[in-house]
Each structure stands twice: as structure tokens, then as C-alpha cells.
Length: 88
Image (cartoon, rainbow, N blue to C red; front, side, top):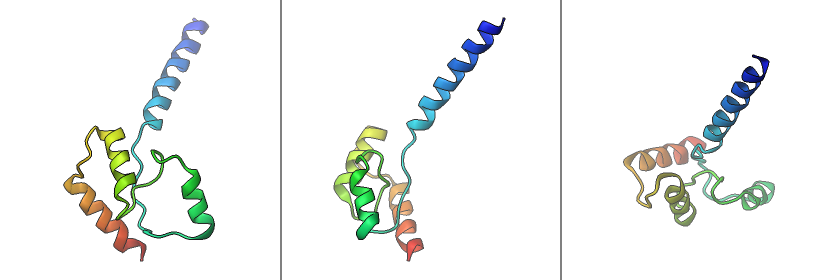
């Protein structure tokens, strides 16, 4: 009985961890960064970086990886604009 409980906990943990790590990154409103913030972004793999307004190449690569399409959705325009103006 205890073996089954451990096996069930391991299975649920691995399923939930896989699902959580595959989530698409959100939007970040700063278009140009400097200093330590820029270094942090450059050291982060491109698929794990946040979407940023006017960063067409990185945003396209992330959309293709997470969604299977390179075209932005209407929600991308809305979220990108909101991120751009909410950061200021």
C-alpha cells in the first residue's frame, strides 16, 4: 500500500512539473534594457525570455516553439501594447 502511495505521488509530481515548466512566458514592457538587466536577459535562453514589444525575432522564435505558428494573434497585439504602456 505504501509503495502505491509513493508511486502515485511521484507520478503526479512529474506530470505537474512537466506541465508547469512548459508554460509560455509573459510580456515585459521594457523595449531597451541596460546594465545588469541586459546581462540577465542575454544569459537567459531565448525560449525562456519574456516577450518584448518590437523584438520581432525573439518573439517569433518563442511563438513557433510554444504555439507552432509564427504569426502573432490579436491577443499578442493587445498584451504587447498593454505591457509597453503599463511599464512607463
